[in-house]
Length: 199
Image 1 (cartoon, rainbow, N blue to C red):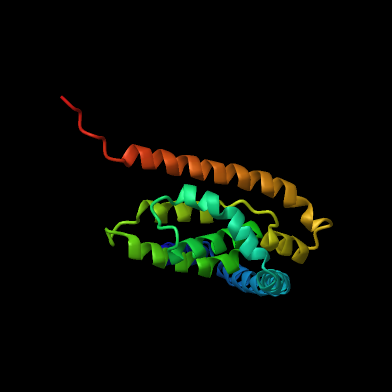
Image 2 (image 1 turned 90 degrees about the horizontal axis):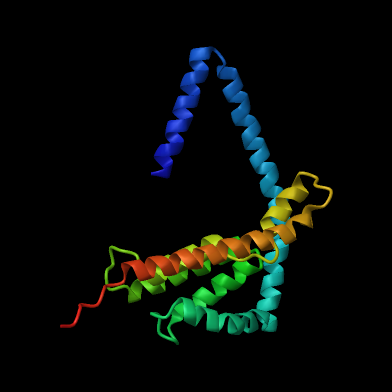
């Protein structure tokens, strides 16, 4: 669906430019956008490689396992339908740990594996389970201590203080995570079956 939306925008953009006689402007914008995209990617690669390397060191040193143990009570509360020793729990904790450290790219494979494991527990394979919805909400709104990607983008565009967003990002992600958990719980309660009246 997203591909069709982008195709629509591109076709409409070229159509309007051709109608107004500004097709060369669209062509120049396309080349400038491609150039800017490559420049930003090169700037991101160095920072992401550094932080992914740091995450690997933290993993080998046992820091991630300790962080995962700290997250375990929260995971048990948020995912009560998932058995305690199920592989999905490990992937969920790894996903949450990577998101907290601002490593969205490293968190994605863990999130996908967690979804695959949750799908195995899902009795209705055509509909997302409550645990899958909770994971999606948390992955999208996750608390972030170090917004690595945003800092890298700001560095790439010569920000005087690229890390100044750490505090505001932490506050914003705490609020977004709290809102996601609240909405998730509200939907769970509103969609849970109402017990029959006695008598």
